[in-house]
Amino acid sequence: MSSAQFWISMTFILMVLFAYLLGSIPSGYLAGKWIKGIDLREYGSGTVSGSMVWEHVAKWAVFPVGIFDIFKGALPTWLSLKLGLSEQAAMVVGLAAVVGHNWPIYLNFQGGRGLSPFLGELFVLFPLGMLILLIGLGIGNRLKSPAVPLFTIILLPVFAALFDGPKSMLWLALGMTIITVLKRLEANGRPLPEDPQERHEVILRRIFLDRDIQDHEEWIRREPASPNNKANH
Figure 1 (cartoon, rainbow, N blue to C red):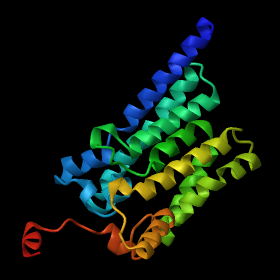
Figure 2 (figure 1 turned 45 degrees about the vertical axis):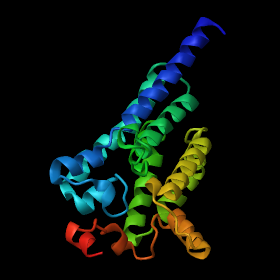
Figure 3 (figure 1 turned 90 degrees about the vertical axis):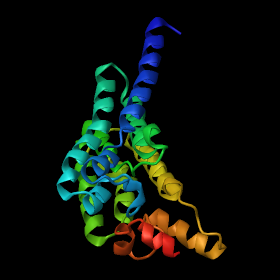
Figure 4 (figure 1 turned 135 degrees about the vertical axis):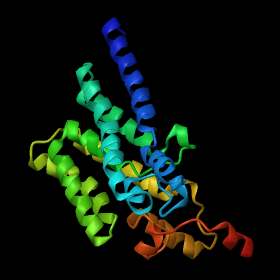
């Protein structure tokens, strides 16, 4: 290995580590703690996400949280390209930020869903893809269907081919799809039901609905039981 290849390899490793650690900063969790004194993981879907900040912390807080989370994906991706790494390497670095957001080392690996840092990565590598995913998120929110953003991610390579996007979009979309499905299934460590039939139903709901029950409103508005309720049970 030449000295140039060695330094490129070291730069790549350091950027992946940097991206993961930056992605791990749990802005949604911190907003919950600083603004309302709550642990966001105990509310709604249990994810440290912008949607839960909107629902359980403060609607205005979604904007600084969202901007910072997008920045977490954009900065390492952009910096990788500036340091001379290839588009494919920058893609992996950006996904490392997504992994950090989803499984943050600072929060016992209980994080969000990774869409905001992924938007930041798309902003650098495929800006039109960022706009397309934002539209998919908006439609999904309107229809209360998390399946729409998932299928939008899966279809990003098609849009990249139609609009002269990066060749690596197929692998980027595949990587993000795998990360998204794994995170939905893992659900921050929430156990699956013991009954086989119910377990099968919950697994399908987690993949396509991103929740354990059918009712969307009931799911996102869940709150921890009060001490009095716990005592009564």
